[in-house]
Each structure stands twice: as C-alpha cells, then as structure tokens.
Length: 451
Image 1 (cartoon, one colour):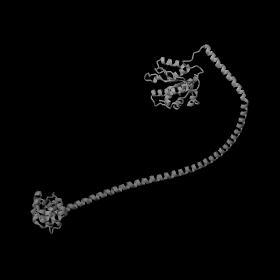
Image 2 (cartoon, one colour):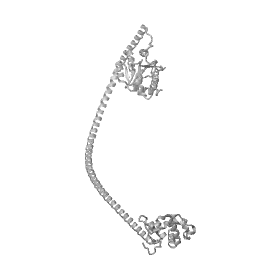
Image 3 (cartoon, helix red, strand yellow):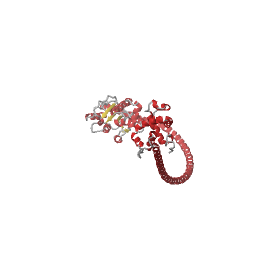
Image 4 (cartoon, helix red, strand yellow):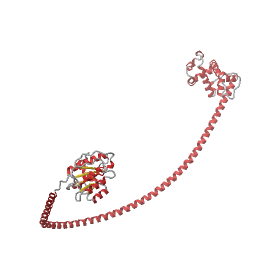
C-alpha cells in the first residue's frame, strides 16, 4: 500500500476505500444541513446506498480535503463502533476484527499512529484478499480437475457406447444384407412361380377353348335332336288328341256318378250340415283342463307354397278345399318380431291370421304355450281364428299334435312350425309342415305388419 500520502483516500485498498465511503454516507444523513459542505448537500438527500453509488467521488474528495467535515463524520461513526474505536486509539489492532473495518475507522478517526494502523490493516486486507484469491484459484483448479475427470470418464463411457453402437450397427447391417439376399431369392422364386402360373393359365385357356368348341358342337347336336323330338311330339299330339277326348269323357262321367251317389247317400242318411270341427273338441279339452281363458273360435281356413319357406306355397295350399291351418304361435312370432312383448306378439299374429282367414276362408287355429303367461288373459274376439293355450304341464307342441291327430284322414291339414320335432311328428300323422318364416313373409306381404 502506498503510504506516502495517507490522507488521500484513493491510495487505500479498494475494499477499505469502499468501507470508508459507506460509513461516511451513513453518517452524512445524521449531520445537520449547516454541517454539510455545499457540494454534498444534494448528495445528503439521497439514500445511503445511492450516496455511495452516485455521490461517492464527491464524498471522497471532501473527505480528503476537508478535515472538519471528516471529524464530524468520525464523531458519528465513533458512536456506532465505540469498543473497536477504543482498541484502535490505544494502538491495539484485534486479530479477530475485520481488517477492512479497522483500516476504515483508523482513516476516519485518525488516532496516534493511525498511519501505521491503516498500513497494517491494509496489509491484512491485501493478505486476506490474496489468501481468498488463492482459495478461489485452488477451488477453481479443483473444480476444473473434477470437471476434467468427469469429462474423461464421460468420454470413456461415450466411446464405449459408440463402440457398442458400432457393433450393433454392424450386426444390423449384416442382418440387412442377409435379409436382402433372402428377399432376392424369394423374388427369383416368385418370378419362377409366376412364369409357371402363366404357362398353366395358357394351358387352361387352351383347354377351355377346346371345351367351349366341344360344348358348342354338342349344343348343335342336341338342338338338332330336340327339333326331331319336337316334330315327333307334334305328330304324337295330333294322333293322341282324339284318345284323350274319349278318356276325359269317361272320367267326367265317373266323377258325376260319384257326386250323384254321395248326394243320394247324404239324403238317404239324412246327414245334417257340419257345424262343429274336430279342432273344437281339442279346444274344449284344453279349456276344461285349466288352460287360460283364451280359447276362441272363428272362421274357415286355406293353405301353402313350393318350398317350406316360400309364402307362395303357403298361399297355394290355403286354396285347398276345407283346409285347416294350425300355427305354432310363439315359434312364428319369435321368428318375425322377437323385439315385441309376448302380448304384443300374440296380438300382431292373431290380427294377421284374421286377415288370412277373411281372404281365404280357411279354418285357422293358433296355439300358444300357456306356461309363458303370468296370469289369465281375456279371450280375444277375432273373427276367423281359433286361439288356444296349452294346459299346465304341456306345451303348444303337444296341442299342435293333438289338433292334427283329431282330423280325419284325407282332410288337408297345414302346420306352421320351424320346430323340427313338431314338423316330423305332424308329417307322420299325415299333415303338411311348413317353416315359420313362410307364414311370417305371407303376413308381411298381405297385411303389412298389422299391429
């Protein structure tokens, strides 16, 4: 530290100079307006921190040149650090005290030997700064050494990872080359197979052309033969027309004789007109056995189509004389509209059957399982349809079989049920069985989903 002119603040170490200005700025606010030099009165209105920041140069200059002002500042500072000031005035510099604080107080108070005290404290400050710098440098060296070690370790790990990745890349490349060779081989095989397939297609096309030519020749031969047969048929028809006329006359005469005999036998026996049907006996038996009060009677019936599921076949069969149509009710409704409640299913089916009875005049009986009813229901008043419920302990299937067995041999009876066991049983009894879908389709086309 330069002590040639100890009264100059700018020769002090920077920490000491800053502390002197901080102490002076703090004490400046405690001075009266008349105790502050004119050039510092504006600075006095600043906050202590701003006094050092904005007015530090002016404050330092006044401290260097105005002993009275410095003494007024020293007097204020003395009150805030009285014990440490007494140590300095007695020429003692405590080793535990901050050397910067010691040097700043010695500069402001200036006791006997203050120059030596400032110099000693300055040297302590410089030594402390140097020691701090060395510690910082040592810490930085240690930090850099640790960073270097970490970088070296990280680099080794990175190199190991890159080596591993390189190995994986080599393995992947080898796998890719192997797969490429396999793909090329597969393409070659596919091309060979495609060539073989093309040749096979050519062979098949040639065989097809030959087959078409043979078929065309055969068709021409058949057409020629058909023309000969048609010519022969015309000849046969011409020759047989007279014979058929004689046979038709004999058959008509026999039929008239049988009708006349039947009418004479009916008059002879005085047979009354038929008012009851065999199915009525089955209905009475079901009602007397405790079945639900839902057995009604109406109308007259008709018959079926070409295939069990074809509504046209059912419509044709309903045109037979005195035909009786027996319907397995829930078997039909659960095929046609299973989403409805049981009561809605029964109502919709019975109304559709009533329309069929009115159109065909057929006798129609519809059978339902009585076990599925929660409670007795009122008998519906539907014209042309007899509605029966099975009695407890039996099913609608049993009721259908009983109705078929009650009919006389020779009367056309149609049973609508997709239950294979029911269909086989009624066929053995002489009835014609049709699938439920045939009736469902017939009702859909004839009544359009009556509700």
